[in-house]
Amino acid sequence: MRIDEIRAKDVHKIVEIVGEISSIGEVEHRIVGGHWECQACGAMIHKMCSVEDDKMNYPERCVCGNRIKKRFSLTSKEFADIRKIKIKEFEEVYGLLLIPLCVWIDETLLDKRKKSINEGDKIKVKGMIILSKNEKNPYVQIANEILDI
Ligand SMILES: [Zn+2]
Image (cartoon, rainbow, N blue to C red):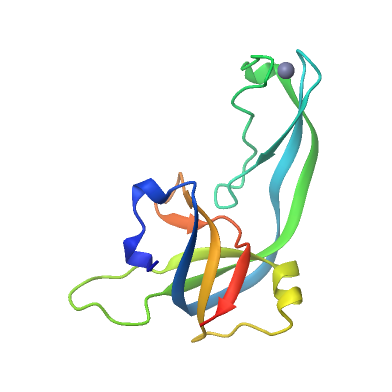
């Protein structure tokens, strides 16, 4: 799909988006998720956190029915080396102001690719669309795949 086709219904879904790389950010060591222990039953719950907001999210509820924030304790945090790239539409759409889409990429994905990414590359990325609480703009949480097109 194209960046301008992303709609509210696509949030929290894994989608494939095509675009041209317009900027590549520096590598950042960021928190990406964590494991929580339910104090009521002892179950472990894994929860991703939204990278743009940079904060841990409590689990909404446990299988035992516990949904009280104070009854979950954080047992481990997960970090990753990620960088933010921006992709834009390759064609100008007349009269439209096109906002590039932010896509977070794990360095291990780039290492596996065995090829660097450069501004101007046309790519397809696959990943989950998230809405930033601060910016209200959609972004791709962490890309699962990058393909040349
Ligand atoms: Zn529980």
